[in-house]
Image (cartoon, rainbow, N blue to C red):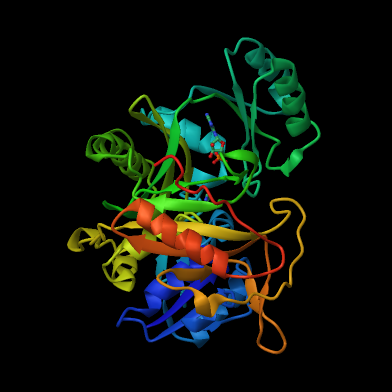
Length: 424
Ligand code: AMP
Ligand code: GLY
């Protein structure tokens, strides 16, 4: 069958590789894709938010399966657009509708959902311009570190963690009154700080039941030792050593099952990925956030560990048949190290020539921000450029391989963290 994948990052390269490996895949199109996805299909110059153009492409190319990588089109209702069109509604579609995507698109919505279904999460309250004064008083009575979250999508930048009440109050005002994060911060969730170790759990939901995918840990800070600015993610490992069977069974019973049941109770037929950001607080899982998609770079360690046919899994998700499938997981450890452009997550230069990929041995290089130049040379085209993924019997071996190969890839403003997985 013909398949359309939306997105252009390392996550989408990992999807493209796994989808194209399936015997069920005749032709794979990636919109817009990157220089890496070209090896697995055809890149199409379409905007991920131009639903009419995507719909027309699907009809013209006889697309039978659509998979959405990033959150933005989901939050904007791409699934609803397909469901409302007689020519598109029968296409198998992986990604929740606009209401389901509120799991990620509105922090206030997801906090209300967690509270309603008794899913463990930090205590919180939500404020807007109408009750800003109450928000300032709420901060005054808080103990310890304060977390402020823009309600809407803010490209991973909308969370502030602040120790000082006066600074927190000034930031709350800047978020609500001055729209520090645009309209995303016209509503702000204030919550208590959770002290623990973070990890992520990934779930596939078909609207009836679910399958658990491998867990992963992402390294979000730019600097070694988890210092400096937050990024989209500088590397990841899977599985997560401290997420043992007993911890994961708590995650399943206290979080995954109530989430799936809660979505059903809300009348949401959720067909897609649920990415649950968790804090392990003294052995107990608490939800930091939901995302309505897979993570990046987590996908670059999760998908390589899934041995089952990904197209078959995606079709079962879209058709509500997940109960008939088995997700086979590779017991080996996977690691990925992200090579970024110096300056990221601030300003950085693009268009640097990348060489040395032919010297990489034993790892797979997923492209994140790359493109081909006029003469076919490989160029950097983003802050996050390449993800070097390795599979080995132990995390230490996989990390050593990713680190060794990270050295062999060359571009002039390359930076990467040499301490991914340092605590294991
Ligand atoms: P989010 O955009 O919700 O993923 O938040 C960004 C990051 O802020 C998370 O990955 C956590 O590291 C941190 N964070 C968010 N909420 C909390 C919280 N309540 N307690 C501690 N850290 C948090
Ligand atoms: N790596 C974090 C994310 O994809 O949101």
